[in-house]
Length: 260
Ligand SMILES: NC(=O)c1ccc[n+]([C@@H]2O[C@H](COP(=O)([O-])OP(=O)(O)OC[C@H]3O[C@@H](n4cnc5c(N)ncnc54)[C@H](OP(=O)(O)O)[C@@H]3O)[C@@H](O)[C@H]2O)c1
Image (cartoon, rainbow, N blue to C red; front, top):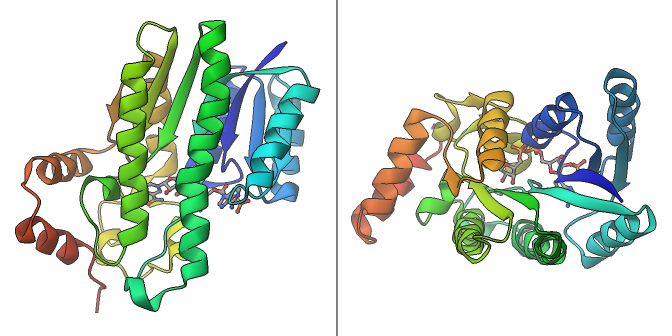
């Protein structure tokens, strides 16, 4: 069996930077995203540049068929997923009742259901093999209820809570589960989330490469949870230690305000 790192959302942003780090370390890759042309471009480039094999599955991960496509591809190609990076995800900024319920369904399917599905399937195999590493991408939005980012924040709270519990369950199995909670990061995320005018993204935005390096190192060390950037760590610690209630909620609402 050929060992690979499976990375979801590898066509851009943090996922592409994470995939680059695996490629530079000569790890074979299984890249997942919807944009087939972009994935093929990456494959062509990296197979020339690095001594690795790059596989790809272009599929929509917000539907269960996306999972079946990956599962079947892995089986048919005799691959062993040694690293699983659940990175694909998106947000949608604005008042809950004014946004689209279809988008929220898609977000919950991608950010939560698919992450659980892929983790369940591959963590079982990793446990049997006695080796493997999982990296789940959450967000500082997951540390408190986030007004105007309510469903996204809750989806990332799920990812944090779930991954930390899994980390404990997998102790002494040879398998580790790590969660990374980035704060604002310069990627295609803000455009897709409709949040160009969010105050949060006006300062202290990190670049995707720095975030990826921090997550990649933490995953290799089998750490529980990593938060890139001092400002993000301070805010996350504050949110985690403040009692839930109006003070925390009002502070979060202030942070999530529009610029004008
Ligand atoms: N950027 C930030 O400020 C920030 C902060 C905290 C956490 N995060 C988290 O970081 C992760 C990566 O986001 P990013 O910032 O790198 O955003 P991005 O640049 O928009 O990248 C998202 C990736 O996910 C893929 N994707 C989206 N929907 C998909 C679907 N239905 N099926 C398959 N692939 C899908 C996209 O590829 P295709 O479009 O080709 O499918 C793309 O490769 C997300 O989980 C996000 O929540 C981001």
